[in-house]
Image (cartoon, rainbow, N blue to C red; front, side, top):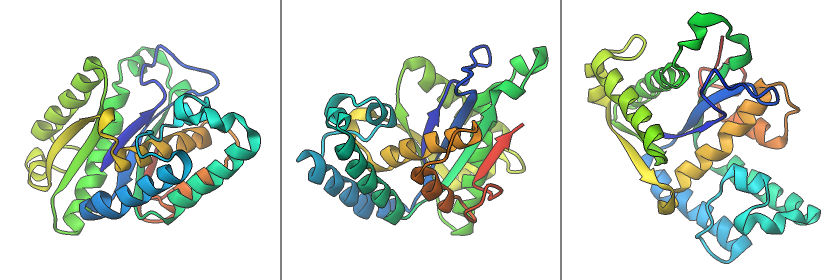
Length: 237
């Protein structure tokens, strides 16, 4: 499972234009991710930039930054997004996501909630069940970022290895999920880039913003069915 987030998990900071925190990602077969997914993402980047080095990152695409400055031209942006949506549609993966509607959490009790831990527990339980269903072992891959972020994620991982998640025990998690692997952005991993591309459309949808084609694609990829109540998407509260 490749993991990413969208929005701020701090309840003291609520952006009225985007009052949600999204933790989500994609579940994909390891061999497929390392071959077909990597190849298709690299082919897409070669066709647009003549290089595989650019990292597909929603914030950079939205703001026309770095290699994506070419998207300032409206027609170029339209063609790029059409091609990107085509890539997202044809790749094989399942989307899982937990969304917290921060503006609906009020009072002193809610301010003490760890939104990251709450969201991570849901994803961990779902991923465990998927790995068990195929009688395999899985790995969680996330992008290495600031030390504070990495520590929070590692602490959550260690806590759940001891205490479990939902209805599954820590020993069951250890049996089915071999590790949490933090990788630097420079590694340019296709699975992490796909995870980045799926979380923002989910956040926009839950925040009540107009849906775009990318959300319809993400919705069709939700684990166990393409509907808002599929197991792959939980909205809290």
